[in-house]
Amino acid sequence: MYLEASSDNPFGTNCWLVGADGSPDAVVVDPGFTPDRILALLERAGKRLAAVLATHGHFDHIGSAAAVCRDEVPLYIHEEDRAALTDPAAWGAGFPVPPVPVDDVRAVVDGDVLEFAGFSIEVMHTPGHTPGSVCFATDGFVFSGDLVFQGAIGRSDFPNSSSEDMEKSLKRFLTLADPLPVYPGHGPETTVGQERRSNPFLVGV
Image (cartoon, rainbow, N blue to C red; front, side):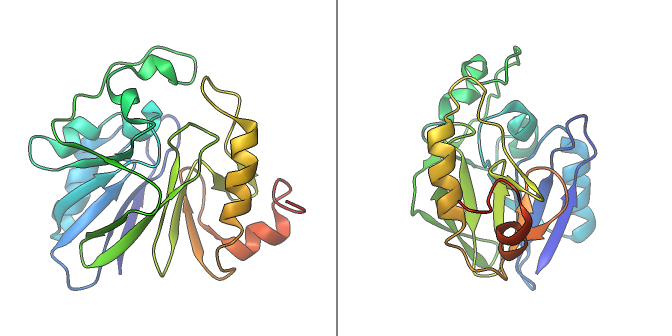
């Protein structure tokens, strides 16, 4: 599996590039702030961008989506966070940010299965951090966005956040298999089992 990450931005947001071995394509999960770097990484790997996926609509995760998608590539985002592209003040973490004018936006819902770059990705709706937060799960790993980090979880005190929804989403996360690698929106990778055993916000959930 081709997997590469970039977090060189003020918020330390992880942007993930992923594709199956042997596939000429790749997808970008959470394009963040550095479109030139993302496109350079794809070019260096010899990969063609097939899609951009957003785990949620906060600006540090979607800020460069328009520059990465350009006029050619679709952006997939949960229907409940789609409004963040045009009215990001709705849940922009308390400060004004500009809109993200992506031409081809495709809303996803829980249970959707997307097929790109030689592998399948299932959409898990995991609200709490935002109404449309999702995890993107595959047979081999899960992109957790700002739901679960190594030793921590995402905030639920932003506009439109919900601590009640966050608790339900954390319980759903814990239905995943312990060995599954977790690629979070911030910080180092981990596994479901490591977080089940040691994350103080998950122990006893």
